[in-house]
Image 1: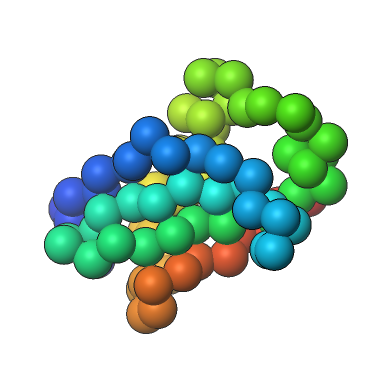
Image 2 (image 1 turned 90 degrees about the vertical axis):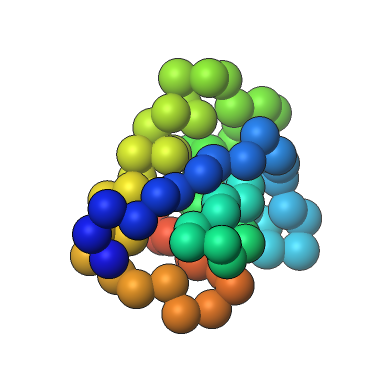
Length: 78
């Protein structure tokens, strides 16, 4: 999983069905939706650029430790 290109799409939105903020990433040609399950994030009406960069960093760290096997990743945050 080293040095794989991760492209973050600019489609951050709140998914009512999953009750989580999410965006898509392109990982080695595979489109993956990343869901962020967080009580704090859920309270936000919108996510600012700084928080978005933090979420992107969380995805990068998650991918260093985990393999994306499906077309969705669920990250539980405290």
